[in-house]
Length: 598
Image (cartoon, rainbow, N blue to C red; front, side, top):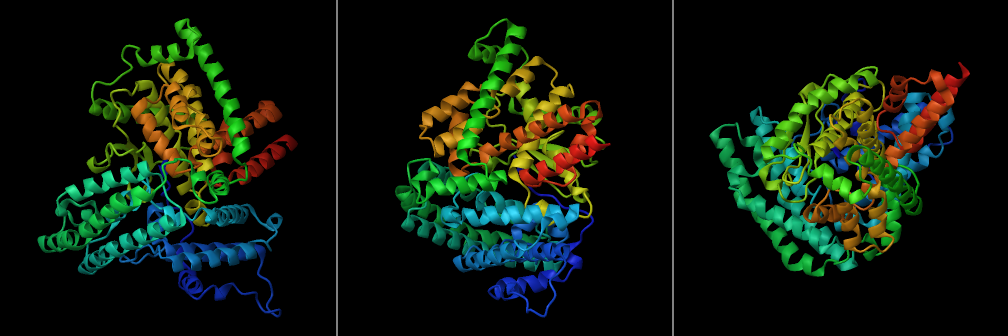
C-alpha cells in the first residue's frame, strides 16, 4: 500500500494568492462562502471549479499542513516550517462548515460544460467531499488510535523532512516540535471524549500502539525519531533538540502511554467490528465509500469478492494440476511454499533478492506502456522501532526532483516468505504497480494538485492489483510459483473485511480465510486481523479497483477488437491521476466510443 505522497508539475500553487485568502475564509466561519449578490455575475464553470479546489486545498492546509508535506506538495504550497496539525474540535467544526459550503457551490456546476482537466478536478473534489461528509458519522477524531498510521508512525516522517540549514530554520524546527506535547495532549482529549461517547478502537489495537510507544521511550533522547533532523547539525542545536525530547516530548509520550494502558484499554471495546461503536453499521458503509470513491456498498462488495475468490481458486487449481499433478488447494500451496529454492535463509537475503528484481520488473514492464517515468525506486526495511509492530510493506513516494521513491519492505516474517510472493509484492509496490502509476501521475501537466492530494484508494490499490496480473503477461514471474501464489489471495479482502464488520464473522473465520490463502500464518493473520479492525473497508479497495480496471479492459478488447492497443488503454487509465472509480470508467468508456467511431 502506498503512503500517497507525490507532487505535480505544471501547476504552481505558491504562485497564486488563494492561500492567504482561503485561509482567512476558513478561520472566519466560511464568510467567503456566502451567496454572491444578485448583481454579481456567476463565475464561469471552470473558474468556479478551480476556486473551489483552491479553497478546499487551503482549508486542508490550514487544518492539516502535514498532509501537504506527506503528499510531496510542499514545494508548491508554502507551509511554515513551524506549522503543526490542528486536531482540536473547533478546528474540525470549522473545516466541516467549509466542506458544506464548497459542496453547495459544486452542486451548481454542470460537469458537461467542463473540459477534461477541469472535469477531473470537479469529479475528484466532489466525490471526496461527498464521502468525507458521509464519514462524519464515524466520529473518527474520537477513535484516532492507529498502530499503522498513527502520529507515532507519521510524525517521524515529517521530522525527517524538517529543513535545518539556516539559524532561522533551526529555530523554526524547535518551535514546531515544541508543539508536539500539546498535540499529544489534544489527541488524548479526543480519545477521552471517544471513551465517554462509546467510540473506541479495539483493545488489541491500542495494545499495539502501547508497544510502539514503549520502543520510542526506550531509545535515548538523542536518538528520538522526532528530532532526526538534528543528526547532522552542530552540537548546540543537537543539545537543544535532545533537551526538548528529554524534558517535554518524552514526558508527553509517557503520559499518553500511561493513559492508554491504565484508562483507555480497560474501557475500549473487545469486539473488532466497527459495528460495536455507535452508528457502526452506517459508519462502515460510509468508510467503504471513502475507500472506493463510489457508492458500491458492503452487500455488492461481499458478493463480488466471493465470486472473484471462486474464480481465482479455480484458476489456481488448474495451474496446480498442470504443474504438480494435484487438485487440492492446500496441497498445491504446500508444494509451492516448500519448493526447493523458493525460501530465504535470512532477513537480509529477502531484502537483497527484492533489490535485485526491481530493475528486472522495470525492464519487462516497458513494452506494455507508451513511456515509463524516469524516477528510480529503492528498497529499504522498516526502522527497528517499527519492526514487529504490525506494519505492512508499503510504497513511500518522494517528489521526483528529490530523488528515488522507497519500497518499505516488511521483513518480520522472512522465514515463511517465498520468492514467488516476494516478486508479487515487489510488482505491487514498484513496477508496474504503485511506483509506475504514482511517478507517472507526478509528470501530468495542467491538473490542479488537489487531484493528487485527494487520490482514490480504490484506484491506487486497484492499479497495483491489476499490475500483479499484468506482470504475468510481461513475463516478470520467473517460475510458475508466482502465477499460483498471486491467485491465492486477491479478493479475499472483499470477503473478510465486510465479513468481520457487517456479516458477523468471528476472528477465527477471518484468520482461517487468510491462512488458507497461503500468504499468512497464525502470527501474520493476527496482524491482518488488526489491520482490518483499525482501517474498516480499506482492504476491500484493492480488488474493488482492480476488478473495475479488468472489466474496463475486457470491454475495450471486446468492443475494439484489432483496434485495441494495450499501451493506449494504459494511457487512458493513467493520464488523469488517481481519480474516483466512476470518473475513471466514464473517461475510458468515452475513449472506447471514440475509437469505435474511427
